[in-house]
Length: 175
Image (cartoon, rainbow, N blue to C red; front, side, top):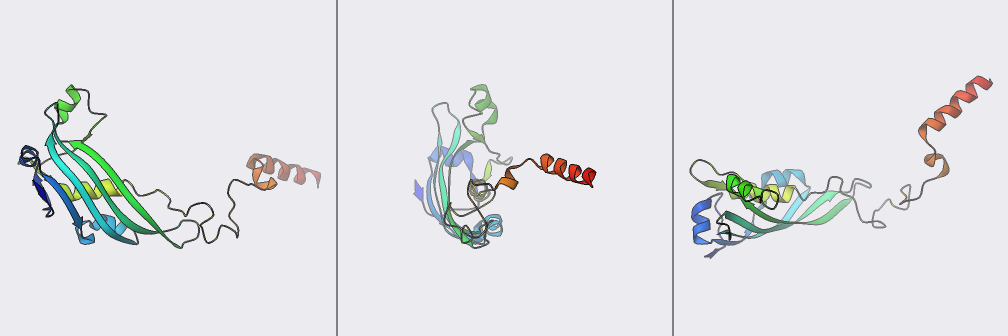
């Protein structure tokens, strides 16, 4: 069953039993934490399916992607990036550990009724793809030619800060 309508909560067991497949375009309002973390977000798309894997684990597997605009940490100018997350997770933590699959699958939680917050999960996956310090590619930054250099240090900057302190102390003794 393939659908383009996505509710916030999905019953993980039922979706796995039905082998539900979702191909959806999401609105930025559906992912408020992502919207707050970036300057702009567009074209949010997710393609994922629920199923039982060969070991009988209930599984969600797929990918989510979007276009975001951030501020370059070097020049402050807008920077456009494509975030793409691939994921494979299960709520069957105990069984995954017993099969020693805990490092191959991410573990997710469902509530006591088996409901899974799929929108929060997709948002988490995309948030994890955000760069720690977004910057333009080398040579693309608006300020690259001004005072930024890539891999080149002047002689004074290459010196150890402790060596510079030592020179200052020697200068004081000589006075």
